[in-house]
Length: 169
Image (cartoon, rainbow, N blue to C red):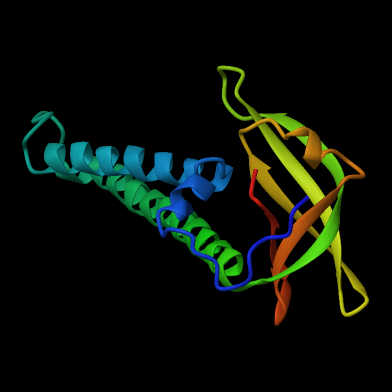
């Protein structure tokens, strides 16, 4: 495979969203956020008399507090994975390129409609020490990304655990 261009590489900011579309934790956190916001709105409206006037406000307080807790959990998942995707974007833009090797591919179900998630594991060396990495994708891996094949890895020399395949599948 051809080597990646020299750093700094031009990669658009919106590429973060492409990285996140196959990230289970981000998807779960986003869904939790949306559902929780709806739950808080419905609960809040029924507490102030907008809906369910037969309910006393105190009866709805536990549901409201549960929604607030779930809001923070979902927000935490989403924010954490977004920061990780931004870090990968910085690695893609400014990281050092080295040849690595694909070690294995794991295929897992991603959604109920038979969409698959492929997790591609790889290894590379930095200063004589081996490092492992993995990328997730909903796109089936090409022939060049099969176990045993050589692939380009871009990593942060100051923190080699921050790495990714290039080009990303």
